[in-house]
Length: 336
Image 1: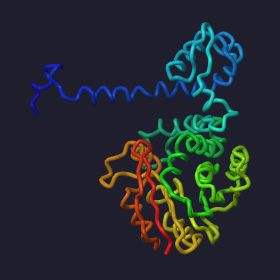
Image 2 (image 1 turned 90 degrees about the horizontal axis):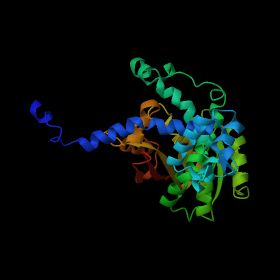
Image 3 (image 1 turned 30 degrees about the vertical axis):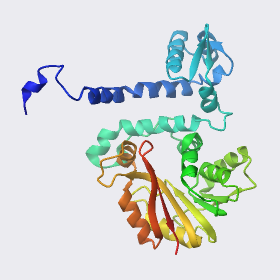
Image 4 (image 1 turned 180 degrees about the horizontal axis):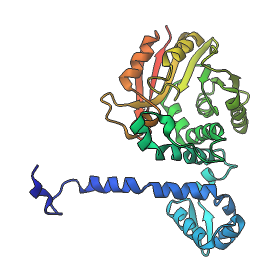
């Protein structure tokens, strides 16, 4: 290695990349601002314009630090100044008030939970055991499943569902089975885009309790129904002409073979299988989002997933699109 090339600070060729890496490692601060403001109820306190003093009094917190937190929220475009008062921006109203159908509260609560898992990453890497990561504190630990399902709604309602629906043509399909469909938000997006489509959400009983709330809030009960089941024990049914498996085939260890066999039995001949999941590049070099998900959960490469689906006796298996920013891709296949 030529040491001399590092002697002159103006004679280096990766300053921009180094700067981006430094920005990345400091981004946890902005995330912590958002999570703290949500946890302290700052956004709900701003349904009407308020000064920092009023917000602090409402929440029983320090006035000086409340003002600093609100200034940081302004920098995140969630709040704006109006004289001495602070006001939610339209973005803030759309995603940070519980009455909004696009509310991200579940996403933020879930992020708070997994924050603790990621602090344990050194021990996980040392031991190879994810269970060595610390559990989140209360109330996040006891509400983990509820927060996770609401997080899936928030993520899907704020881009994920719209993106999926725009990649597919289901205009000639009528009956969708959404396996592990969680809150049902993907089915909502698909049914809104394709008027001839009706859907059934299939998930655990504790999940379906939330599903019913979400479907009702979107006024879709006439086109979307739900059914309880456990894929470890139950069949998926039969007679569907399309079936969605979104984020339930997380690499090796996800029992993909079993799930796909049940999916094949649920589809009529010619039925369309739609799989959306985190997917690594075939050389396992990224994308970043897929690599991060793989680190703590698991992910197939594109070719690995295609092979698994073909092994389940599906035809016309193909990757129709990928989204590097989100780290996921969509694979479709046809039941013979």
